[in-house]
Amino acid sequence: MAQATTVPEIEIPSIPLGQIAPWALFYGLIAVLVIFFISANQGAVSIPAGNAMHEWVHDGRHLLGYPCH
Image (cartoon, rainbow, N blue to C red):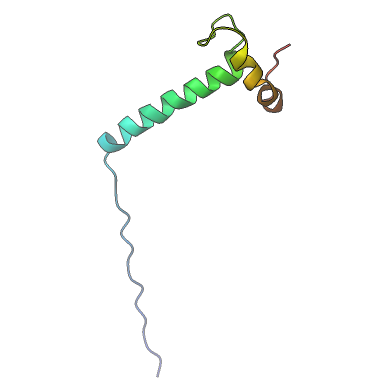
């Protein structure tokens, strides 16, 4: 005699947009800063003075395809 098996239903929790929005904004700002330091930092609009940031991300810029010379 075959037994009928029941599959338990999985309830996916929903997260309200109001709880996600502050974290999305925070990580979005972090992403913008990372993109600035890697792609746009040529010294003219550099947050830290000098070429230090450019030198720190120099190899990463070439790896990601950003020209810097």
